[in-house]
View (cartoon, each protein chain N blue to C red):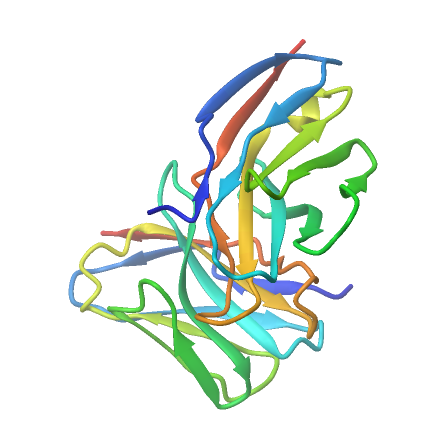
Length: 113
Length: 116
């Protein structure tokens, strides 16, 4: 089945540590996105990529980094500069037309040890 | 100013009743799209319905319909004949086609609980 796979489902980070969240899609979508969700809140855009080897900052990019070396993959690194990383992280992809919905993965819950 | 406002943090509704979830938005872009998503407690985001700014008719998808009032900048989701499985968080989101950052702007959501 076509879809988006995020891993791991749960992730724990120690102070000062970088961690990487995986996002893979087989929908053949050019555009991919990372969102952060805090408890009781909506989603906020961290980074997005509309094409391979190109990505743009969203509203809350500080403390995060991404890469887009392959169309199918858009990993997110939460760096030690992100002082409040505990959140639910969702990856999404979208087809080429603006009226198409974004498809989401099942998310990764990141916590601080 | 918030671009998407959902004024109902939580709602309790009796099973089989219709429910309306409110959403107002703010944009100066004449071309935009409005989306509703459902998020069960498991966390995944499920797309429900889409309304484009130039669409002449209100969108419908099964038990879901969208009450789109462009002049009032509102896009309320209507769920008919609610079911216990409808209990979830519901998010309204907007995509501005004209410019600025790509991606969706989300409201803070409404927690809907369907009671038997």
